[in-house]
Length: 155
Image (tube, rainbow, N blue to C red; front, top):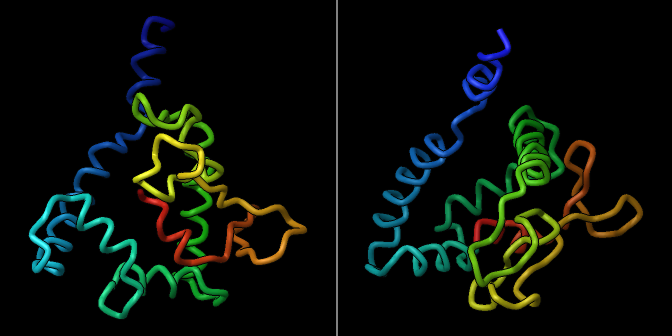
């Protein structure tokens, strides 16, 4: 029975990479057709999405709607999922690639400025303490209410 412990533990883990890849391929396809005038590499498209706060940027518009103070089912689910991401980062100990910031990827070390990814100034703490101002309450934690900055998260 003990011989199977490791095998069963491995089977119980969720394969996030496969889910991420399916979502990334769909997202990649969307932005390449939506911003077809760019015809550049992925980094150019991502930077465009991160800095386009117009109505044309559908992911940003949806993000703003979901992160708002409304108490709809969709808002509450999104905030719960965002908080789950926070806890997953804290448990996972995912490191930035070699030569980048030396701490694990967390909301407290979110890469804000890709060009400064090797410098401390390229990172920002998106988590707020209970007594601090300008915050959005998820479930148990608070994040910065600067929607543009929080939207930057997937640097």
